[in-house]
Length: 449
Image (tube, rainbow, N blue to C red; front, top):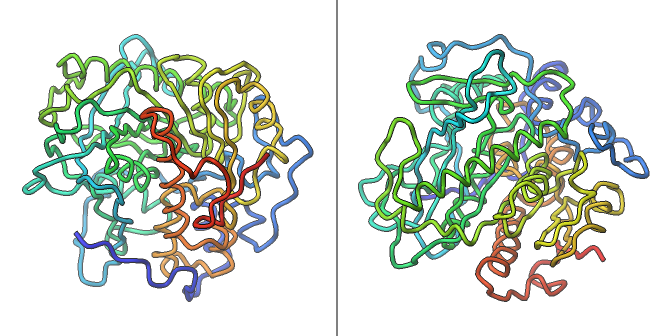
């Protein structure tokens, strides 16, 4: 599959739309009203830290992750009609850079020990996850869509688009391709995404890490995410109560992560934790290394890394991509390696939660900043939104408010390099000079000392 480079980058001619429509679309992509109006976000407070709630002035606050538009609930039947034609805008994804082909499988997991906190009654907690891994013999295994059809159409509709206008990309993940057995047991990485965002938002990073020899598990936090598609075309949407405390949300996410790790343990012993008992990729059970587990996340998902590491000591290393911390977790000592990876306007000098965590990191720690990047630069939005900016009616100024000035391809390439360097160091004991200090090949990265 060929991956086109986004030709227009930031040079997009916006389609004429009303001010209200442009504002709504901008909010749907994670902007604050002030940003959508072309105003500079307010200066963060001196501490930028609330134990429970985000600082509304902070552009990196989780409320800016993936704020959904107000739209009427959509029935699944309404999401499958129509037919793609030649006028449909085909989005693409950046190709992985590692030496291995990529396989993928989705799993439905049910935690009967917990009830779902976001729905009434005693419904067990259900999750959907995707496993990305180095594969072999990919011929005949189709490439997984960035999102399944029902949830994908819901995702587009929340932005005022339809599958007839935009075709979501195919990923590099070949569904059910055999695991590359020559690599032996694979270090495991878990991914948690932004508030009300979807696990698909970490695909560019996940499939790249898989191509480098990792088993990466991206997790949808049901009823926190805007849309999750379950078997038999069942769609579950965001039902989180308004004003929910971020610290409580993180506890739910951490419990989700611990449960997923337990299910990986089941797979490593030859079991199949999916209640539907679908076919698993050949060689998967022998590939799960339960002794080498790391975690990374974007925004609220980055905060979930710390909370999850406090809850589950099997997570040996963690990386936070521009996420503010909440609750008591950052005030507790953590003796395992941790990376803080921030956008150009965010670091521990203006985020008190990062300063608090930094003082409690007792193992290896590193704090790096990606200049020119914005909060949304650490999600797949960075790559995809510029491609569809004409349909969204977004101007160059609005794109820069949302994603900063860094080129999309460059932003993702640098994130891939530094994430891999960190986890290679901690889970594979492979030294990388990238983490030693400034690198002339990556002048956009600075080390916060």
